[in-house]
Image (cartoon, rainbow, N blue to C red):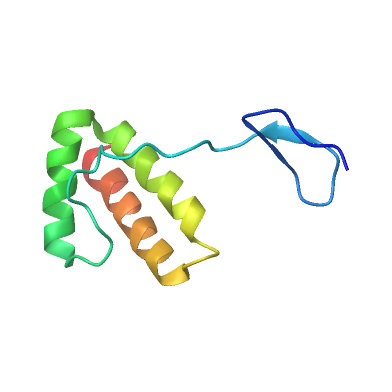
Length: 91
């Protein structure tokens, strides 16, 4: 089996290598955690949007959601809800 170059991932069931979502960098959502209550999460996200911008925060939440939706569905659902909240509120 052929391996992909660095930064690429193999599509399931094919021989194609495509650019993946990438590695997540820590920080950017200072203090945010899926286990926090809704109001605390929204307060932290408001501060993150003020510092980094709505699109950046949206993309970070989306990347975390994509990585967690299969492995931890309940956590992924929290990230999805918060991602949608950022879109509705700030975009």
